[in-house]
Image 1 (tube, rainbow, N blue to C red):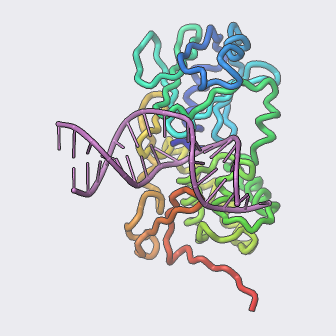
Image 2 (image 1 turned 60 degrees about the horizontal axis):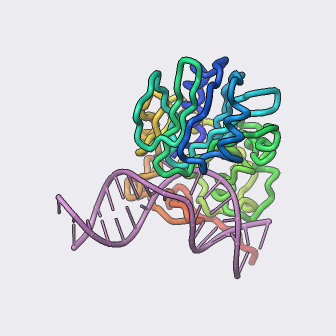
Image 3 (image 1 turned 180 degrees about the vertical axis):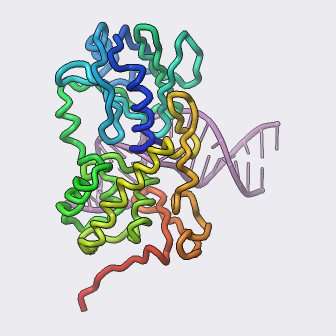
Length: 272
DNA sequence: AACAGCACCTGTAGGC
DNA sequence: TGCCTACAGGTGCTGT
């Protein structure tokens, strides 16, 4: 489910409720949710105050100390839901017990992870710059001299942090790039367009509280409204909003990719 | 280096 | 209604 705009929406809601709040305990019957393990997370959390709630890529971060933090990654179907009292919520994988409040981590597919980082720098080093910053996005794309398909690069969190399948498809459409175009065959002026479009697409979705297809919900258990603004993702067979050509879908690197064959032609330069 | 394939899991939609 | 299959927004591992 959630990509950068969805995680940002959740973080904004968590921030208002969690900042400065004391952790009493973690409760869970699903130890595989935790890294390195539940025992460690309980030990380092109990009695600590959450200093700050923020986002890095698709990670939700709860700062505990100068350098230490707990990250929550929702992966495909994770949700954070507030409940003032004890409740029975289906697929609850963990409960963060706080003074005066409980945060339920709910995740049907159990892909999500709650991770303790003694030093945040260790996580930070694995991620490229945040995809909401136009200047850093451009620098990341320019410095990546690769023959890899542009969509594969956009999905690589060590290149850019935050894009997933939906917004990678939308970004390629906005820049008129076929998702399979090798990075090293994209001229710089088109890369500049792409670098400008990516933050624009993400910020627009943040304003609409993210894209809900099925699972994603905010902490208030409501869906985001950005789905109606998608140009290619999930639009197979529908008329392109620019040229009316039917949108196509193709599996690339195991992920479904949506594009307009007319607006996003595959142009591979050939040496004759 | 780059890519494919698979693993992790469950729910849902569609075909019959 | 019930059974079966395909598919799903993410990431990490292995093998080629």
